[in-house]
Image 1: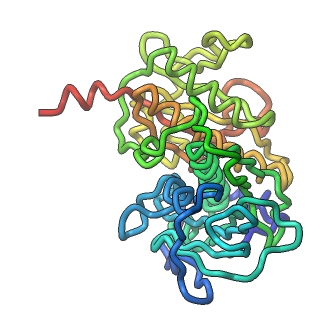
Image 2: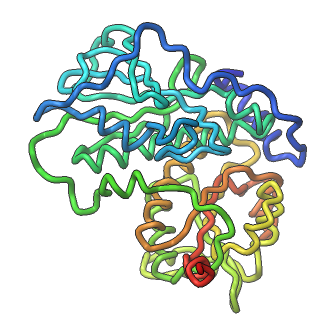
Length: 370
């Protein structure tokens, strides 16, 4: 179960969506692949070279000895995503293939570059399923795909913070031995500063999943910004809405013209979401819950991979937008029996919750601080 077999993904997703509970924890194995050869420090980049040291520190490197704290989110902080760097010309590393160790922030040379390697670097992302399955068991596969999407988004944002224009690839075949996703980062085109929309390095290093509870309904402008970010990044096969409480509880979605929010369904959904999200009761009191939904029961393996990778990618970008608006936020990836369409009266099996981002204001915490 170390690499996904595309033929098994529909069955794996059906099991993950079922009411069955995971059994006792099993060994997670090593947190980093046993890359061959000696570990190499990432050299300082020249003025015309892509700074891989900075790119990886801002995206994948562990910030503590346990390896739990990293710029990319991961279910249970188990971090199953492994990275191979394919460096071409214009990098701080000589051209070649390198396995990355995020705990030590070192690389291991695996060989020369494949023919046709473009300038810059491509981060190829695969997973060691045992790490996530050790705790989540049959619920692991959707989480593995979501984690890969989060890692791709972390690389994308880090590249933009460095002034590069990265190209994520989230529609790869995903066959055994093939990366699930990749992000290509070109070398810098010149000394130009990053665009104003790019994140600052400090923003990326400060991104953390806030601990629950997350009370306080976000302002409408902040909620619209978070929803709009997710919708732009999530592709055409996912839909997005947000469950809110308060005096007029319901599901909100962006209006077609993008200038405001409209009511998609009336009624309090958060207690049901809490039950569907592995019984995490705190979700019932979250200020809002951003929902990615789609991926029908009969989806084939490419569709499952594509929608889950894009959901993880989009929620990661939405998380940064939430923080920019002063909101607390926490991704929620494990969903059972979460047939949102059927709950709203549509035919069953067509519109399942794929991923979520719980949101709240910080006012309650600030008021309770001595």
